[in-house]
Length: 408
Ligand code: ADP
Ligand code: ASP
Ligand code: MG
Image 1: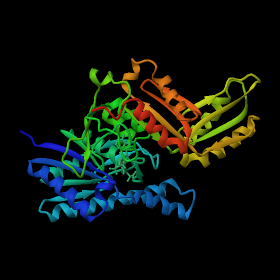
Image 2: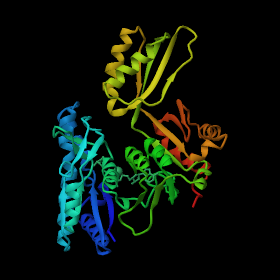
Image 3: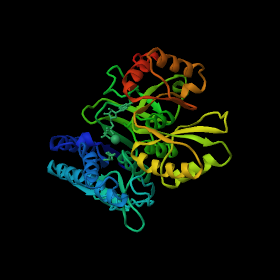
Image 4: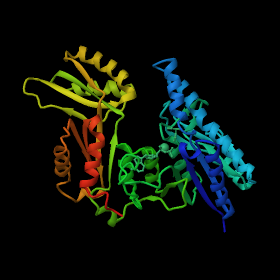
């Protein structure tokens, strides 16, 4: 019988210092003791990635993306080398690799590259030599050997992609909380751990701000049907299984509440109301590689209209430069922006078949005197843009009203 293969990912807080790295080494070794092969993906220690980004911003407020990737990829290289040392120290053979060394090839989109292929031969060879393989997460290289990173939280994607490439039996994501909760347990102590959640729900929660899993990693897991076990590095307790849907899960209307404070709103005033204008604006923005989210255009009574939309805060300056240029060309009015917004969302597959959920959400916000600036919906989520200062209040009220503090 062939040995089971486990792909595990340890997040930044799990390897923040040498004691924690030793704890992770013990955890990995316990799998080896049960005759399982282990490939461990590691993130940068603690806040290293944020610190590196900050360092770059102290040098220039517009760092070249290629150099950002050179810089950011170093964080993971440090932790994977240290973890390999810690595993060897307790008597097991281990070897660390960068993304490039294990053949993770990506496209050229620096800072948010997509994985194109993985040549897993080197990992397989090391496993066949009975080594524990430790891989630096969040990174790869292009076909012309440029280092790329996979977007924030990208070590999750490395783990899921390796689980697929190696046909692993299990993919475990170890983090600092005990699994996926009904909302961020660090901000709402009443949040409850969810035993099992669908790929679709997790994808929606991740896209709408639950940073516990990177959204793109869930897309890949869904595409290849790779179940993921999210659990704590600091406890043996079972965590949350992210799996394909089941009928029972679909019957629950709201499974979680999320918030996202990383967007900014841009409004172009007095836009001439004629065909082709929106196409022109959004084509230019997308050419610059900026992801636009919610878009609202008012009904025009005067042959002029306002268009508002959200962009990632980090892209705000770039977006404003582009939009101001276009506004001039098309004879639009002022371009305004708002940095003080947040998106609060409710997510649940059951929304497909339950009515009145949106109305209930708006009522809860109104009762709490939270003004809604924009609304967007998908089949399984409803999001409202609100004043950032009111985020905590809104999330807590929604969590309570949808009885999420009571679910098992
Ligand atoms: P790691 O370094 O392990 O990748 P992250 O900081 O990326 O960890 O993600 C874990 C954090 O995600 C938790 O500490 C928690 O505060 C936050 N989080 C946000 N929403 C949720 C949620 N719904 N369930 C669990 N954790 C959440
Ligand atoms: N270190 C990277 C980040 O902080 C990747 C990761 O943690 O998954 O985003
Ligand atoms: Mg993470």
